[in-house]
Length: 592
Image 1: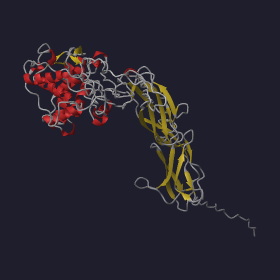
Image 2: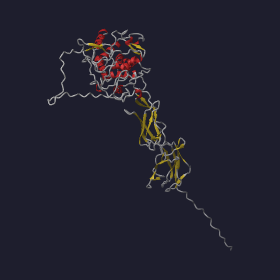
Image 3: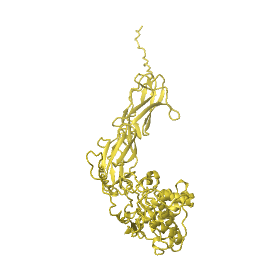
Image 4: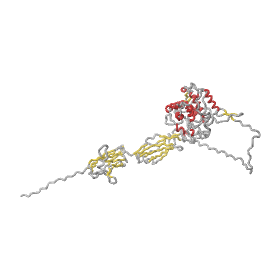
């Protein structure tokens, strides 16, 4: 991370005399900071090399390195009221970049609404932000409050730091082997997964955004019902962020400094830390010792070699003699070199997330084609659209729905704007629910699941195809078959379910238990049938029979989709025919 990383703290080193003296001077000249919690000590609470301070300690930063610069010993201008001063007013160290300062104050207001008992002061967030990242590298943020490049701590690989193996697949920190602290408030990915916030309303929880990070830090500090107006609670909150008493003292000193006054400076013009991180421990001075410069420009004592006395040096053991029962020293094999870890790809080349790219409701009628196509967008670890990401789409369910080409699974590579769109879906013949999943990524795959459904074919209208009167004598069958045609939005409705029911007048045309009927496979009367239109939307009913009850009856046809028609059936005895009367033939009467 350029020069700044070289100035970051190696976790676990003890407080140096220089830092302790500066804290003491600050306390003596600027009014005392609030006391440490009872039981706190002046030394670090963890050791170098990651023996403690790992994930089990629950620190927000994973006990990552931090800056140990202390505030000036001169009190800022206009103590307690200078936070609204113009940019040119006050000491340089008291200046906080505009967007960063706005983020801290917004977080204070938000937490005051959601957790008023916490009494979070924005100056505490400013103190932590100063120690963790130098106020986002002096306010290097864009108009939305996001750093142009991620602020990343060193890999927490146990080499001088805590050992925290990867928890996010490199999504936030670009490292798929070990975790790193991320962003201006330096959250490790596993903590961000729990505490991440969207404070700027852009729909993303971004640890590299100062508004999101400041609110997350505020809520993290308030956890457990803490009241930060109480010194012991504030100490516990800061130690939960980084479990080091030196860290607590450094944050406390900046907290007190900012409470006495700050002012706003333009973004990008904040003061960056210049002192080194806490140096590695070195032995105390010895008489005759020399000094050598440290990275911070100070000197640390170096022991002088002790003069050797003539004859005091004992020769090493000679070679063993055969048979004398002694052996020479066993040579120690040289340590095996540890292979360097494979470099992780930069965040811009690391797949981070998958999101819906505008897919609407997925519904189609049986046998039809879905109007919507499933579309997703791939983003990299920085949240930018990412091209050339293979996305696999899979249909799961029993409806028979498939992608065009008859496939259940297809893979599509995202284009320049990060979108990958699956082929069109062809609905199966079985109605019901199914799902489409989109999966991308190999180390830690990201998956989106879409619910979809196949509905029955529909007809909004059904009519008879002729208007012949349907009449039968009691106990006979109707001579003419009943035919009808179903349509949907004016087009023939093929494969639509139709229910045929014998009904009688009454509320809702209730079912009838006498009069005309169909026959089932065993020849028994049946007055309700489920039928389906053919490829042209046509329906021909099976034969209809009349029982012994004459009268006028009704047959109702109802389609899936709401189409309906009522057809009249008449049962009547045939008219009797009366033979014509014939006059008797006249016979001639013979004349007398």
